[in-house]
Image (cartoon, rainbow, N blue to C red):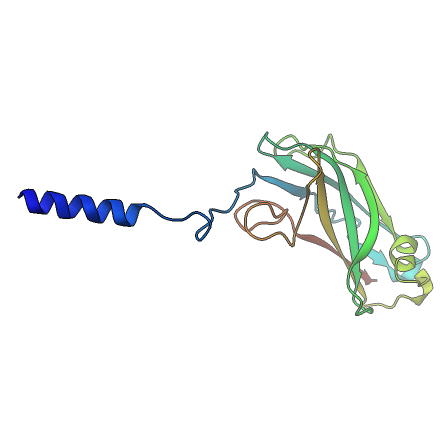
Length: 172
């Protein structure tokens, strides 16, 4: 019995100690993510009035209470351009009251803004084109959290109700 106790003690001590440099524990960031309303009355650029059309939505953020956002950067990608997403604009970060977005100011993206981000005029757009808006949240402590962060800390982590992007189609 005494030998079993000693052997058990040696095994526990041997396998319970590990070098943290060899097996680092990743930092787990508190949750902060984008929340936006799906605007069904203005969810596309109307090709019939392409010079004057716009997309309107409320875009805010939710936090678990540990992080405070100072701004939200919007990036835009165009289906007719292979260069990838470019910076579109920055908006104020307003924290949503749960799922309620009524206190969040509306954000407007015009067809002219979207087209000019790629050196185009609204008249250069065609039916079937699309724009994808993605986000980055700037935090009070200087960090930026976006959809490309790995694991915890992504604005659209699959374990949170965050939204990854908004698609704006050019259609009738």
